[in-house]
Length: 194
Image (tube, rainbow, N blue to C red; front, side, top):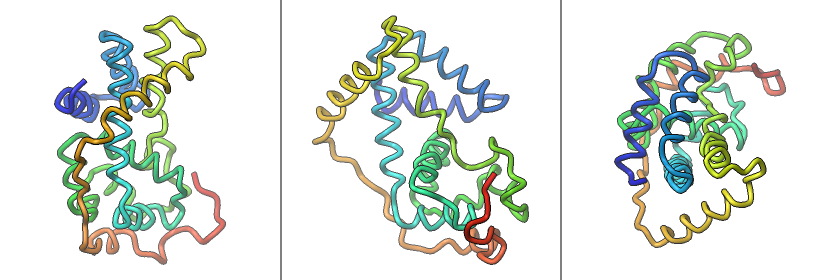
């Protein structure tokens, strides 16, 4: 699976109607129509796209949106969510994290207490990280496929290690997000998150 095919899938996922469950079903079905190797290649592309999100500026932006409650795992799930927004949104946010202020799903959270956010409203999507392994297991007929899946994934990632990957570096702050999500409006430290 090349970059163009990967982003076509992410763009298709971002445009699908329905909730996250229905959208993941669509993605699973699409991946099932390919090979087990393509499912592993999809995961390699997904992980590479998520790795590029790990910038200080994006950490700050996500912490602002989530009222300071973004954990390491939460940031990883944010990266998955961002990739699932499609290539245009992904690239815009990498170039300028303040572009998150233009994303409809983020704007829908403005002014609302974090405790009122439904699980599927958080700008995080952990379940996206499991689709390729599940499809790999189905296509190979292996119930316990974790070792085989990650072995194949490691082989792909090692082969691509020398590939030059440009990481967008955002130097500007996030004034629009700061205005939409003022620090004092976040949850108090230690308050439960939804």
